[in-house]
Amino acid sequence: MGDLEDLAARIRGCTLCRLHEGRTHAVPGEGPPNARIFLLGEAPGRHEDDAGRPFVGAAGRILDAVLGKAGLTRKDVFITNVVKCRPPENRRPRADEIEACHPYLLAQVHAVRPRVLVALGDTAVTALLGPDADLASARRGHPRFERIPVVATYHPAAVLYNRTLSEALQADLAKAARIARVPRRRSGKPRPGKPTKTALSAGCAVIDAEGRVLLIRRADERLWGLPKGTVEPGETLEETAVREVREETGLQVRVLRPLLEVRYRFYSPRDDANVDKRVVYFLAERVGGRLKLEPGFDEARWFPRSEALRRLHFENDRNVVRRAFEALAGVTGRTPARGRGARR
Image 1 (cartoon, rainbow, N blue to C red):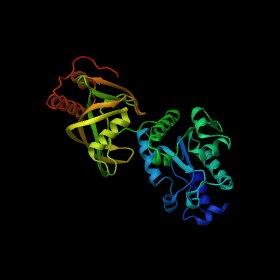
Image 2: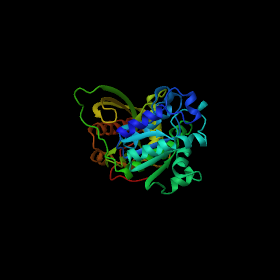
Image 3: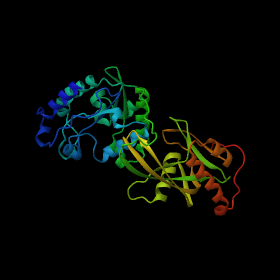
């Protein structure tokens, strides 16, 4: 840790380029000294300049969310930027500024000795791979920096303007986790003495025209479940449920009625806190789209009631499916399907 601490002190006092003149704080970076994954962004923004820490603004919230979906936390990664001080008006760093900071970047890579480097955006790609490199070709290839694999991907700030890039960023971070062989941090029973936070999610039991329910399977744990996700600011519960189905499965659905609310508590390694979670489920029917799973899921199938109940791991999910089939006939007049599940 001493090498990184010495580097951070030198960076905070650095005057090698013009960027030091307007900074509030230099932003050396942060993370475990033995992190297997090294994330490299472009430059600090206003919030990072105020705090002296990387990725604490809107792009940081995107990064935290995508790391979580990829099975990672900030405790798994070292995070820094190509330049350590904020460029005026958040402009791109200039060539001489990047050159002035490059020895710090090299020293950080040598100190951490990661198993994989993740280049977030074009500036990070060229800083690692040279001025002729570009993000698109680097994503297609298998580049290396000093024999370390480089995973090139989009900067989280790009996701703020184009939400469709979130899936690619998540998939690339999951790829980095596989290369680095990062052990998955699993949730568990609530731990005494840990703080408690609340979480609100919404999801759907989606029924097809044949009266079967859609289940999706997580790739990491091989567990079947229902599509659901976190309520974002400004969303209603129904809007969240419909959006999560679309993002996780590619399907368009129409909500038929509220179904069930479940609550449970668990310990979250990512937050180092106990989570009091509430999930509101809706009965919904498929109205369009085609199955295209979000990274992190490896299979989706339509199941009749008995087979769905057999496949589901958690009792809460089984209770939702039971309630869905109880409500199905009253809402649509359909008879629940019999037989085995089918891909579609």
